Image 1 (cartoon, one colour):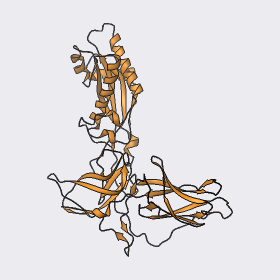
Image 2 (image 1 turned 45 degrees about the vertical axis):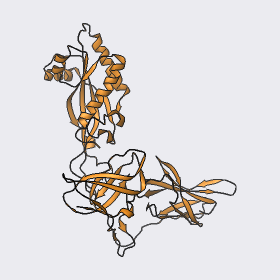
Image 3 (image 1 turned 180 degrees about the vertical axis):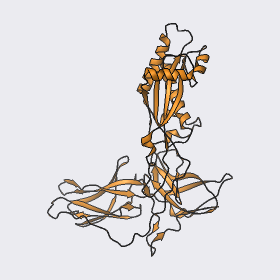
Image 4 (image 1 turned 135 degrees about the horizontal axis):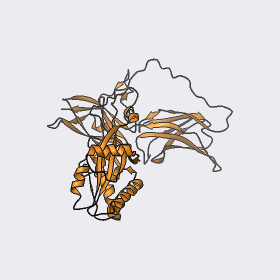
Length: 401
C-alpha cells in the first residue's frame, strides 16, 4: 500500500514519463504542474506541457474492500482509494498556427497510451515521496471523455482562456489508513475433536490416489504424512510446487501402500507460504504416475535460539526490531510481523532472499508482546503442542523496554 505522499508520487512519476517522451520527440519541452492561469503567464520563455490535477474522486468498489491479507476475525480499515483527474495542456511561445502545441499534445497522448500503467520502477524512490511503489495495485492511466459542456465549465472555473487540452485519470491510488489493524491470537482449543467427514479413495481405482496431508500447516522441522492408496506402486518422490518459485523435492523417509512420509531436509529453495504437494511414482519400467496436488502451507518461523527477542524504544517511542528466521523470505513476498494483535509490515530489503528481517513500529510503553510472522498469508506456529493443555508458546515474544 502507500502513504499520503502517493498523490505527489504519482504526479511526479507522470512528469518523468511525459518528460522522457517529449525529450525524444520534441526536445526542449518542459513539463509543469501549475494552475492554467499560472501556466499561461509562465510559458512565454519556453514551450510547456502542463499537467494539472484538477479533481480527485473516491472509487466506491475499492472503498468497501478489505485490506489485502486480512483474514476473517481480523479488523482493518480499508485503504482510501483515490482517483486522480488530470488535464494536459500545451503552451507555446510563438506558434501562430498552433501546430507546435498540437505536436506536444500528440506526443503526450502517445506516451500515456504506450505507458498506461505506473509500475514500481516508474517512481522516484529517492525523492522522499513515500512508498507508492509498494502498493499492490498498479496505477492505470486512461483517457477521460469530457463533453464540450464539461470542458467549457472546467475552463470557466479556471478563469483562463481556453486552450486545446485532454483529460486523463489515474486509478487507483491506495492511501493507507493511520488506524492500525488488529489480528487477534488464534484459538488454542476448539472443543470436542470432531473432524467431520473424511475422504476415502475408491478401492476399485487402479491409479494411485493422494487424499490427505498432515499437518496442513507445517513447520520446516515437521515430518509430512501423506495418506492415500497405492502409494507403493513405484518409487515415490514427494514434490512441493509454488507458482512463483517452482518445484522443490523433499526427502522421503517411509513408504507403505496407504502412507508416504517425507521431511524438509535438504529442501533447497524452500520459502514460507502456500505450496502444493504431490507424489510422483516411478515404476521399474520408467513410467511415471503423478497424484493430484493437495494444498500445503509452509509456516515461517522465528529462530528459537534468539527467543525471546528484546528491543529498546527510541526517543520518539519507535522500536526497530531485527527478527532472524529459520527459512529465508523471498523478495516480493508479503511479510508482516504480528506484534500482539498489530500487523507491522517488513522494511524492504535488498537482495533476492533474506533470513534476518527488520521491522519498525511505535510502542506505547514497555511490555511483553507475543510475536507471529506472516508470509503470504501463512502465520508462524505459536501454539505449544507439547503442553497440556495446549497454550501459546511463552518464548515467542519480544520484551520492549
